[in-house]
Image (tube, rainbow, N blue to C red; front, top):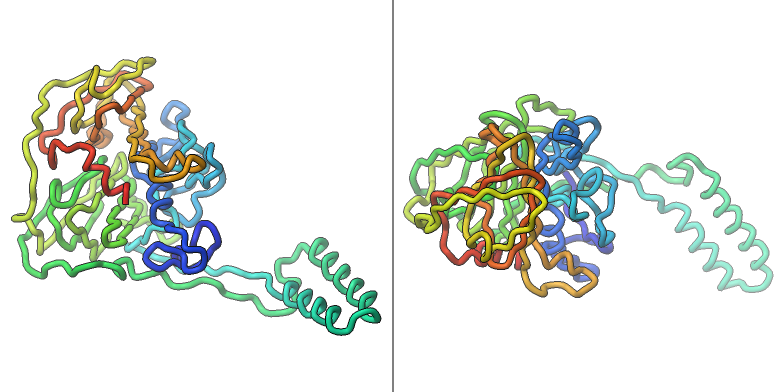
Length: 394
């Protein structure tokens, strides 16, 4: 995969910031790919016409997330949608696109640049400026001919000059880590499915091997403190053609990072340097289960107490949507970036489609497309639910 480039000008990024225009791309990236923003993992056509697939498994022509350019479609703010269309909020889909580093199978792609005609016109203009009157007619004719050649050419290689390979090797995903993980620790094994997990609460810090246990879906990490953004799409039918994988090695999870796993996939995590002694969690103070009805809006703090829940369905497919206000981080023109959007899809009777650890903060409004159940999660990091989203405020 290619190095990340600036969204605004295409310049080189250093630690997420463009060296040409200075734009902090990491904040925009975190808003443009989010595991939970649309959880239609591979159910693009099968799920009652719900055609957005947030895990990106193609179904009937849908593009897989995590591939370079999340393909056509624009959200309501004119930002690039990372998939073949828009989710119900018009927000960009939650996965990473080419800005995530896939540590499984990798491919190198090439690109082309049309530089010949630009250089030619510049030279002609320089001649015009230097010589003056007698050359005006000649240069004008040459420029017109060159422009006509550009417009009429159907060949990408019409200009004189060889094909230029603009591809670059991908960055080291750990290039900007602030510290090294400890070599010592405990052997730790666990299996995780659909949901969002915090390193140090749900899984210990350590270097992991991640392997597919069942199903197909996405895996990604969000660690802005260390500028680590990993992505992989797991499938039992992995092949070189689609870059799906069945395992990822050297997956470094630092305390505080978030791990997002797509619906309909179960992944096994194994480490031999797990920092289990540093894990901090507490029992969930909530114990009441809530059933949400469609065509009704719920406000957290009124009908539902703030807290951490597992989300499941009661019949067929259903979607729960909500957005978390992060603060006034961006100007009004980019107000959508001030919210963390979630669109969680679940299927009744499918154990792999129970979303783990939906953190609902005070004042959040929730809508559902079908009857859904909120069950308090067993363990939580803390009762400071707003702090869960601090990672997206960085």
